[in-house]
Image (cartoon, rainbow, N blue to C red; front, top):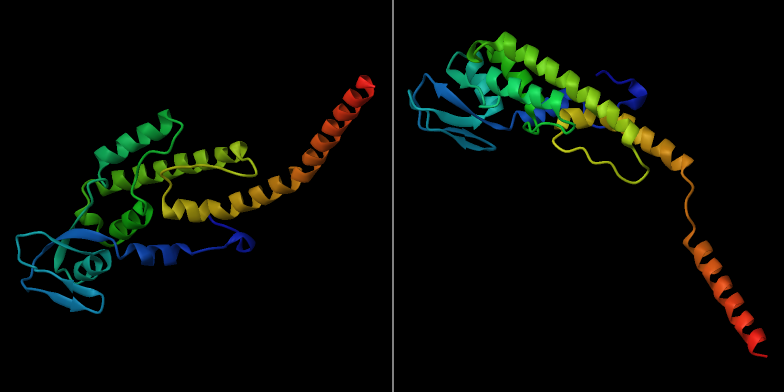
Length: 205
């Protein structure tokens, strides 16, 4: 969902993907070393055929050097995504997916599609999921009120895409909704009470 420049507030897709590269993922290394040390910390040990958890950015770098096989997350499978898509199409709420699912899936499929079983089917399911969820988000505009809107289980990329549209819609709704003056109702109550007191006083005389 491309945004006009005038609506492009917040992070860019590239910046969001950069943040997602810190997510941890499993790999199967094909080299042996105890640890690799970085400014952000140490990773390892790398001892094939054992699995190792590393940040996604390191997994992608090792994959580029043909030093590992990336193990896709359990949710990045045809079976799981098919189930999520079925839930999206049959239920009003958004199905549960990882907060950074779009970015992680894109990075892995771009650099290590051969490590993802039935990767083309996975790509199609992700595309279908995104379209259904975007449609739900647009429908959410009809449920807007000036104060509150709840949409659970949206991913960061999805939130970033719809934020400008919802922000503008909220602004327009606030302009159209009259603001209630609490002092006005308080004054009205005082006037009514005073009137009743005077009536009682006149009656007693």
